[in-house]
Image 1: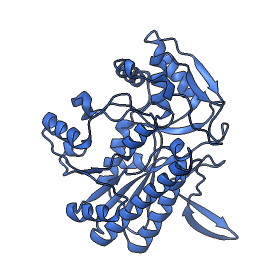
Image 2 (image 1 turned 180 degrees about the vertical axis):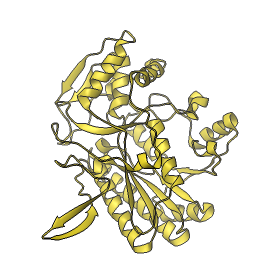
Image 3 (image 1 turned 180 degrees about the horizontal axis):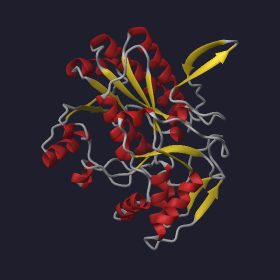
Length: 365
């Protein structure tokens, strides 16, 4: 919708994998939304902008090759992966499904570009979770190492904490290889957790809102805390709550994608951009949500729980994120006003909240 509203010709293809998994795991979003063709039709009705839609599985090479040949896009925005770390750690079948889907789609996509449309620019959704929490500054994708008097530039070492994040690491290596070998153009966006449920296009009609998950499998921590505050459930902080990550507003996700599209990557080297605007610890986020909720006369409590994940809770975290700023990113920071706007929207759908799916249902061991 964001690109169509700006005059681009857009083709959207989906196979409803995320929706299917959400149903299978009782992790439905807070606000139900219609399927892709109906949403596109509704958006055209409200805005006058058309989006072509197709239902198909991009892990099937024939589907991927056909869509690239038919549309011959200037750019492909690749969001077609199973996006949940907890889901990938649930059991063998879920892990296998994550591995096969994520790598197959990426592999098919870069081959379709190579074979049919080598001028196409691929914008791939990566994750800051690829890096882990090393005890050094996290550079923007690459690091220069001097060893025994010689110097070379390498991909920054990765240390993912879930299988999902590990598939993203494998994506990065895979794309780096194809870019270097075949002179292709790819941008890998290392995105932090996203919060929010409002965009100018989505606000045209309630049925156009994004999938807002608040559960333990698909819900990011800010969204989850906002729903817990409205539901009167203690904010569930895993362990000490010192886990620090880089976060960004949904509006900035769209802004970053547009900046990457408008300034294509050079050939021969994978462009990596760290996509976040602020860093917070989990306990700091909980305190900020508690403070904002007080302005709505909502008394919020914070509850520390045993951490279901295998992760460091006290660690150094200082990632570089200058690339998107240089391209023109104008951040929307997390403020009380942003949180209050989210809380008011969630409050309107309070009856949809299922508190049974908020606390951890999946443990790493």
